[in-house]
Image 1 (cartoon, protein in one colour):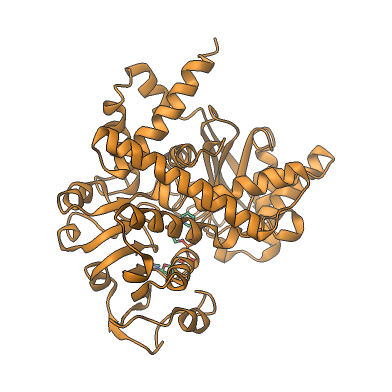
Image 2 (cartoon, helix red, strand yellow; image 1 turned 45 degrees about the vertical axis):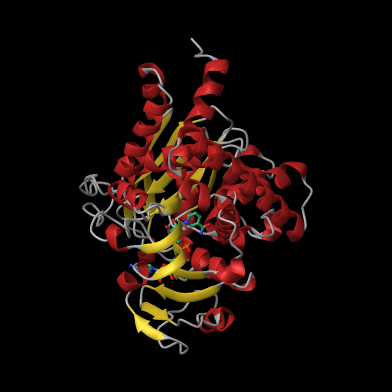
Length: 432
Ligand code: NAD
């Protein structure tokens, strides 16, 4: 019996994109950068259109024998700079429109940090919390089988995203390898270290955020041990960013998660908070050492550095005027809406945009791919050193573009990325 007829394949499309959605925000910023670059119309359309979009039906035999059918997607936004790269999400809300926007986002992110990849994204419209491990494995292997002509170490390289993890990546790698009749670890990233994953990958995004924050502080002639920091979100990105800045001597005056926030003007003991939350896996609620605040209050605190590292759309036209930080580093994807950009610019707040600040993750994914292809694995120290260098170079490049055009770091990041892809495309030419 097909009992997922309404919740799987045939579900209504997800919410429409609106002015404050992260995807529409990205498109607004893309259009602005295209104007600065005086991009001709044909090039604009080329860069705005995905190279390939694939939709498949993914049948799943449940443990009780029922057959259900889910919709799976993979969108290659472009492969101008190299093979395309991007995560796969399992979510009941994922839509082709969303995947298309996220694939473009990956193109700009890879270009900003000079990683030789194009952008892609994929997803299966399902609720994985309803599945047993065996069901999840069958769904993943069937989705991968449908994408055998798309994925490949030289073509398109998936990675984890919402509700997918090391185990899901391992199943993708194994299914692909079985069909190629050889082990191909480089076909996905985000694998366990024992199977060709990279040391340093788990901390990479937070580490990259901190590299860009330190670079921004040095442009202002400020020492990290003299600044106050507020971090929204205490998961992977937030807790690592807070810990590394704490280790640099910064005073972390506020942290939060979905259960609420904590404020202490003398600074919070971050290693103790990390232990309390088991590395950000358990809620912060009840952690002593500060006064309770809400997430909204945290965003408005007077501090030197604010790191929104929880979710999208946190700083928007309603609260942007009340933000009191000097520097904001976007740990999360899209935590500031396009409508808030101008308000923050008027307040002269430096915003380190997501496509730069949180690109440490994709940078170390690139390192994972390089190591898999070499069959030679680096020490964590080497990974971190190379990551710091790439993030620092990326920050300096974007900072220079922002000075040249007298634009914000966000506008500069889009200008840099779009210019890089457009220039490469012009050299390659349009194959006909
Ligand atoms: P995570 O699940 O490990 O942590 C998310 C944190 O945000 C948790 O502490 C959670 O309690 C908190 N949170 C959730 N909803 C909240 C709310 N409404 N208010 C306040 N806090 C809330 O996720 P993560 O891997 O740290 O990712 C965080 C963000 O960074 C996401 O936007 C993600 O897309 C982005 N990102 C992550 C990576 C990565 O490598 N992990 C890379 C690039 C971007």
